[in-house]
Image 1: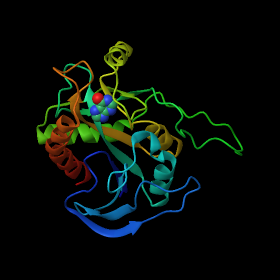
Image 2 (image 1 turned 90 degrees about the vertical axis):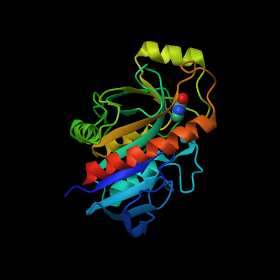
Image 3 (image 1 turned 120 degrees about the horizontal axis):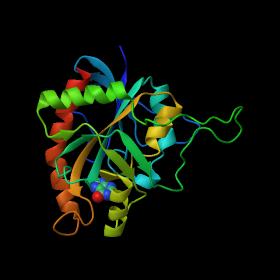
Image 4 (image 1 turned 180 degrees about the horizontal axis):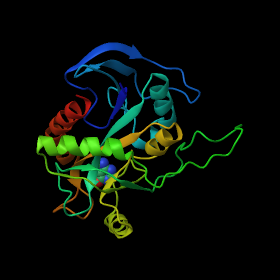
Length: 244
Ligand code: HPA
């Protein structure tokens, strides 16, 4: 049976109903991972869990060691990854509380360690990244969302910004012109590093605020936190269905 790993984003530092069996701290050539990997049973299956921002939450998006995280998960036995990401909504359908199974990415980040293929390597490798997310895993998320009856989109272009600041209105307008539906800060390079390690990877994004200029006022952390508290309940229910 495939061993799934969940990478929990903001608001998801633990899985309820998860029976913890082991805490793993892997040695990686890239330095320390964000937190101990939790190995345990969820709905009767072996599952790994990693809190992307650390537990407690302490790493901002641009300081996450994405390479160490992905490497450590692979070493710990992960065979597929479901990433949970809190995002801002750009497309009118992406209101707070909406869930989106992203199908494409535009990467606006810079200066992040974004590849395993560098340094003293035998072959320069250019991985195919036409379709950044694994379609079979995406379809499982979609089926779980349909069964749960939540409002969601089966497609969405995830624009990944550098952070930690939120965007300007002009930046969001530009991203909208580019075709972005949601905006977050942690989708990349995580997705491409999973691809480089040949790990199927999919993203379950929870909209926690209208992106800059898309709401009635400026964005507050209080608004984001309130949307997270409500939305994470749905995320957990979806994960339980996907893993069952
Ligand atoms: N922009 C970028 N990242 C985010 C946002 C946003 O509006 N909301 C949550 N993560």
